[in-house]
Image 1: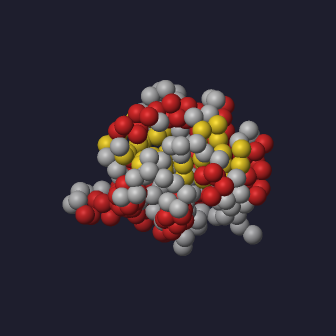
Image 2: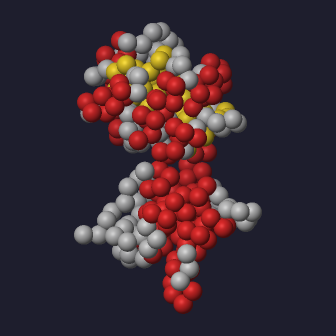
Image 3: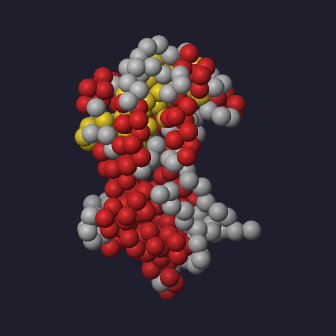
Length: 300
């Protein structure tokens, strides 16, 4: 398929490259020329504006957005409506709030434009391993674009979740769970690092726990990588950002009268990390960089 790709950052560029490797034609747009140049090196055709991008696509046009949630996504969707026609398709693969996706789907429907919300997980490792895709919207549009999802995902790595907003809702909860899992690992490694008399090898323990333990996971593989590179996480600030999904998950729990104490506390611990430079916070910051390339703050 021929697909317009808006946003060629850490995930967007890798997703475009994975699609190209599977025979799809990608026309990419990013604000920065260096990002467009990087995409061109991977085999993508590029455009220097959204209008030019739309002109290079055949009808029905498919636009996949990998841009930040909130105002950037809102502005881009609104602007794209000037260049798209009835029957065209917009896919939001970012971490938008699911209620925004429901609203945007209705806005686009009134213009005859189809919309899919695709919760995307896989971080910077998705190029090699594939992306887990949680997809919401019209079922017939999902069916039409299934070859694209098959190219991006590993085996059984994509699924239709339901109507508009369902994909981003499931991804929101996914990320809320991620917050809690990361926090549990961080606290455990903090306890072991504090037991100075044993001089525990955290990389060795991470590897050990992945050999049949009930807490084995990909996150532990990343922890092993992280501790092998920097055993004491020296010079990493224990500052842990949050990108919104954890807050939205807690808000959903409150609105639904569903107790979610572990996810809630994991969110609050991220707030605390911005005041207290603990080892647990360093583990959290380091792990987020390992799986998502989110970056860490280093001490000066």
